[in-house]
Image (cartoon, rainbow, N blue to C red; front, side, top):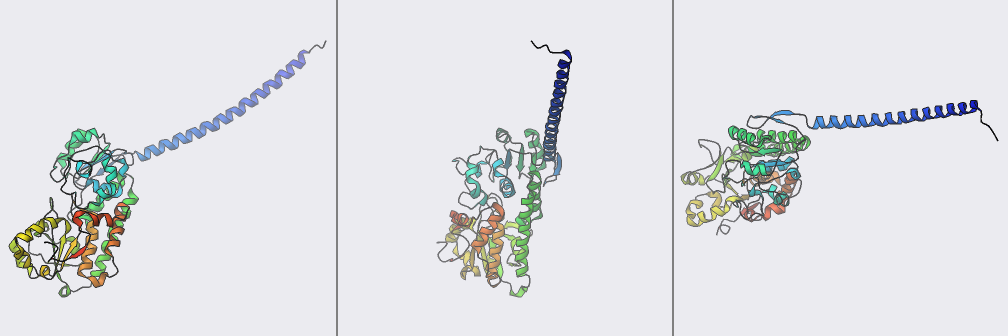
Length: 407
């Protein structure tokens, strides 16, 4: 029988103790490494959240100071004429949590005055809009926001086009979320206010690159048109009349514009002068007949054709006082306004006007191709076929045969 000595046992116990200490030390190192990694990850995530959701006070387009958290918004509602259209140019449509009835074409009970008119943003996103709940009726007759319907959509931000400080502040108090007001300005797509609205959306939704790309594209297009037409002397410019521009709904041949921005950009001579104010407005029949003999070219907005046809049948003599009408120098542009301005179409119209008035300078421009190019820049897809197929687009940009078209 072997007897273990006490010294041997002590030696073995010491070895075991050293081994345990080494293992424990290794485990501590491993745990420390994981802890450091975890801390770093937590720190990085915390920093990212802080950066993405840092509060920022911005000034909206009607001078209101609003505190926002750029990049944090997940539920968006757009209200008022033009708000959803402008948001769709640079914003993420998948973040929308409600839509006005006028923009949901699947609803039976909704404003339908623009159903036959091309509205590219609705055409581009109709499927998405149709799946969203109502945030209000919308349309030209809706002069106030419907707070209860907006609340039912549970937005965390509202993009608005109601240009009334008191109403917007009151809406903010009711909703408890930021209400940001956009604005385009009298010159529409070419106005500084449109550019600033795009930049504002870019800042709020962290889409600065998209906003800058779009505004630079518009500036470049404007520059190209102006440079091509810059050298024409006034004596060589035909007199051009723009008519049918929508203003609170479709209008007729007497609705025109003095100091029309597309004419100014394309260096076109406007047949209408001497009015008390600028902008879209109606003139008297007497004014139309007075200038009729000097009108070389008439540009007619497609949205007004349905109103002009019965007027022509009832009073053809008034139209026959217009030289352009008698000479078949009447041209159709796409709808400038349809629940506020179609900004991409306004740009395309400017190209078409320039090409119509100065065909030799724009031989290389195919208007269908230009339409596709512009809609890609604004909405990410070529849309000429969809725009031209709208009932009140009459097949697209064209010269009108006045002897048959209005019969």
